[in-house]
Length: 415
Image (cartoon, rainbow, N blue to C red; front, side, top):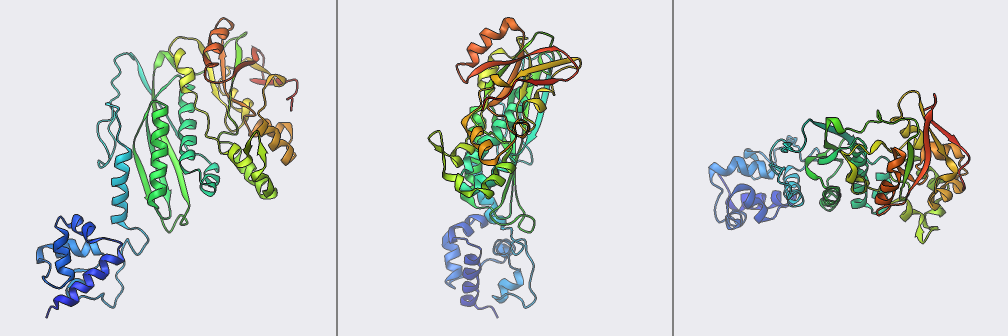
């Protein structure tokens, strides 16, 4: 025989065990919280029609509800495996507020299985999509340790955007992926806010993505970020380096620091010399310097897209100037770079000195102050340098000549 008080107490215990308020349980079942209150006070029983939904919400069986006790044989559930579906759903509701976009090309919001984006551009005769995926590397470990949760999202998006704009693309839409052992609402919201704001600053939209909770794969407190971008360009205007010729000039656009490469070496340096974390480098602590977000270059470069002015653009990331500039130099040509012309940032002087790092290691690991290289004909140098100079320091560091080595250094870095 059913015992209304015993069942009410059982419902109340299971609701609290699942971190649910009466209102939250009521919302999930599509009823009033007064009905839930009556159940828990033993005034009425739940209707038989609602028992399956109630049992699912409380992560128990219908038999357990009727007996008002958990059966002796332990029932496995997603919740016991570490994934709370109701909590995940509440995260999605919070995310939807942050994913509201004014971009009319975004045709749907959070909820559908995939995102819809209108790519009809009447002013682009031969459109091609330019796609790229990126993650912020080991810098994200430091970001979580030192409280740069939103900032690391700007790193990821800015790096991602820079990788597509070097081909002359207009950034359109970003999809993010967050993998974690346990989803902490404040942290997830900070990630989404950071990614969404970084997208807006780069004139593109965060259109959706995936938050994957994997408690038996990723440790609690660990988050792994990645994202994918779609950009668009006219096929005839794609910048891939094929127009680079003998006599072209190489301009450097300054970085603001380490950006998102070389952090495994930096973490090793910090492990060996933990005292450097709070040492000052130009008014900022070492940690503040290395956690500056990766510089975004779309705003300073987009003015000349589609005008046959840029013969080549190289985003200076892992591998340094040589490793990245060589990717766009055609066979039979060589970009001769004057190392003495590079304006090295103080943070790199500090890293080199503290780690006793060789010149070659610094050049191969870090950008050393050059975040982007622009290759163009001499007649465009003045106008481009003046325009980019409104945003970032821009100056010549080399010239393209005939040769077998795609990038060749001469002179020495002036530390």
